Length: 402
Image 1 (cartoon, rainbow, N blue to C red):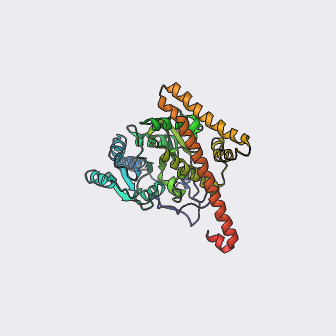
Image 2 (image 1 turned 120 degrees about the vertical axis):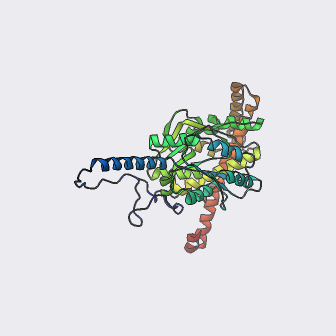
Image 3 (image 1 turned 90 degrees about the vertical axis):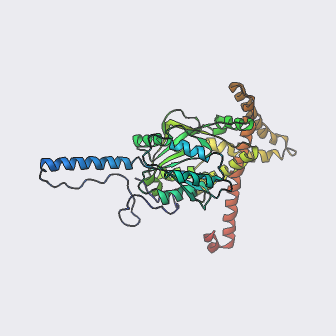
């Protein structure tokens, strides 16, 4: 049973494609209702019985079609280079039943919107909407609220990835087979330039992914989090969709609420995606700094403990800060030096194994990822603490507002 009120406040629930039942505040159940007491009915004449059987078969077929219909959402911002190929690939799916693709654009300054408009003129399956919230979370919620009626599934597509043929229909088949509320996929990160190949090697390894299932798993399994791919519309709406105040880590925060409400997340091994990481050190730093802040916000919202693979890089920023005090005590430099040497050595080992010298840059890439994530996490904690302290100093009424 999915409970919209699980795990504290969530964004206002979106319009559901299924009618609500019960009184205000009643727990919404997606389980079949108990059958009512049956009353005796007289047998139908043979001709009428055949008509009823045929009508029932048509209704069952229509219901099955409805369970295959999907809303595909692609949040975009300045994706003119890839949006055409992404749309073409996603719609090249023989198993889709009356799909609708909504491109939720956050205000692109390039030709993204013009390209999508031109495609939509010749293909009624494609629609462009403006996403004033700009974030992916806001785009998904807006599309779900305006275009999910009569559709059982929502697929989330990232413009920075490559997708195999029949990707979305495979996800739907997996959801129907397993009964999952959400299906997530594994990622194969790939790079083109030297630095991007180093980043990809780091993110595909234990050094960068820390054993995360959707980075390393090779078999289907139930998980608590993964790369978002497909949601059941009813489940997505029941927990309030994404928290639009999250610019990063909105997926992990959503999964916490979904699991807490009784939803189940299936990591499929039937399909996977190829993802292209950031190609410059600055872009990689900004991405992982935001990831760290997002994870801290999730911890503060739900009071959930960090896993070991998350707690370990959390120590990096304090370790580097302690190294700055080495003139007072040289021993303070040792932890930072050990971390740097371990990262660089790991990158060298990966480059030898993969016979690609560019992969040696996995070491520097991992250093950027660890330090940026840790710095972002601590920055968010300090920001939260300072706001809370300011609220306490200014009095209860002011604290309530903050």
